Image (cartoon, rainbow, N blue to C red; front, top):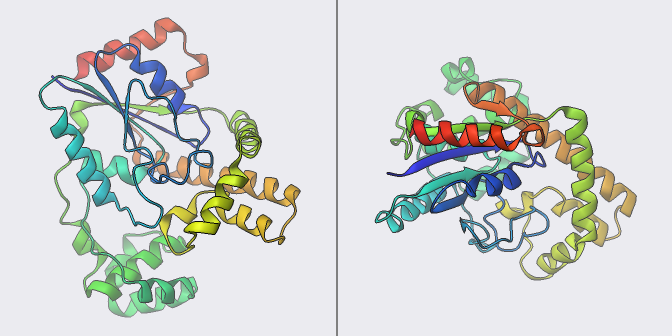
Length: 303
């Protein structure tokens, strides 16, 4: 019988290291990437992608940088992993910080058609009031369902309506079935205090730069850089490009990377509060071996 464990948390919180440690307590573990940027083959240092081969790691660095990769693509890949491992009981450990992937895994997802580039480009050039005015006239009900102060959410509602002539709520009401029902999964949320996380973020940025993040980005910039593609959204990538072009100093680069990573962690915390209320919260650095064994015991008995 398969077991399913989900581990999420803010960037730089230590969730990948904990997943690796936890995997030692199970037979036939498979660690599955649940991070939207660690899928790209061009980013190893910049996304702190795991490099260990054992236990089995899946969906890490398997997508070329010139390709788009959606939530639906990730779900399809997870299905294939389940199929390939169907002859033997496994412990699937999902680890990452992309909430949309966990939502799709545990709740199902809306198969919204791809947004055409011309619509996306137009959207990116508009301010929040433009979208609100359009939606007020053409899809007023959606304004009661989304955070109208969140430009990204409002823009998304506008893009879907413009591209499909249907409200985003229509697509959201036609979810696929979850691959792993909540009742079948052990849900673990890594949480550490803000000050400690800020220190870890600073250390991570320094480590990335010392390990060759600038050279990694330079190589991509010379071969396949395209700021319109999802891979370019990796934190630090665009700032390093600005540094390479002489537009900012090294000190500015470090500062920008730290600030943007902290901002990203703040958005992740908001997601956790809204969508991961029932997950078990813990700080890996404060866990004894006995406590880890207790988590393992609960994981085994809940599946």
